[in-house]
Amino acid sequence: MEGKGRGQLHHEIVMENRKALRITGVINVESFDSEEFLLETSCGFLAIRGQQLHMKSLNVEQGQVAIEGKVIEMGYLDEGAPGERAKGLFSRLFR
Image (cartoon, rainbow, N blue to C red; front, side):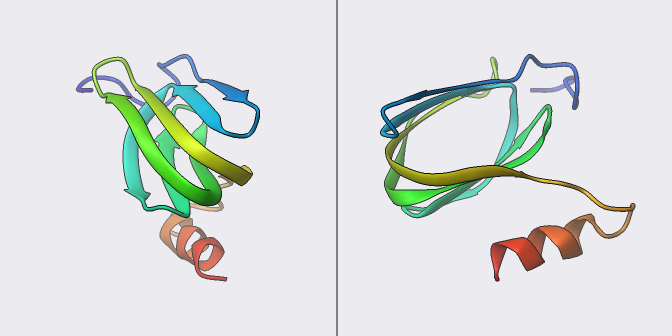
């Protein structure tokens, strides 16, 4: 997604019965496994936690991701002052 930065993509999350997510405005998939996805979106970093999570589809050109599995929680990781982004991100991931 060259040339597209934060704030330039429309960001939307659609969840169906806690079993399927469709997310737009995705800039980068930072990491994922069966229990957690970490996505960089145009509105900040989004952490999705659950069970038996898997990526159903990914369209990098349009910034769209579809995830299936049981969603337990999801939230944005707020960024602090410059330079504290990595520290805050990793401290929240590894609590």
